[in-house]
Amino acid sequence: MDKYTRASTINRTTRELVKIRVSQINGCPFCLDSHTSDARKMGETEQRIYCLDAWEKCSFYTPEEKVALELSEHMTSIAENGVPEELYNRVRKYYDEKEYTDLVLLINHINSLNLLAITMGDEPEEK
Image (cartoon, rainbow, N blue to C red; front, side, top):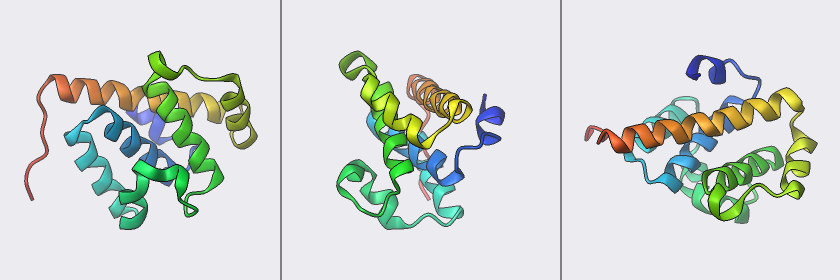
């Protein structure tokens, strides 16, 4: 799955932001450490990483990133929020059918990895 999601047409920055946001929601320190490091290596700014918890109030995320982050939050808390049809329609303004599927698979994949890392007690090494 990791190989597939890396090869998807979803912008690499968006992929890392989604991974970080989902890991924040799930409280996965191992994945947070890993994906914030990856984001920094690709040139992501500290400001955008630190403000992910309040992305909807920040003007420096693109509309495509914002809708992907919103979908990520709804999928990660699906029992509480579901995925409203209105959100699906907004996502589809920015992502075609394949990209939407890739985004859903990416969100599902990072949620699965978070659950595995937390369950197995994985923790980041202190640097």
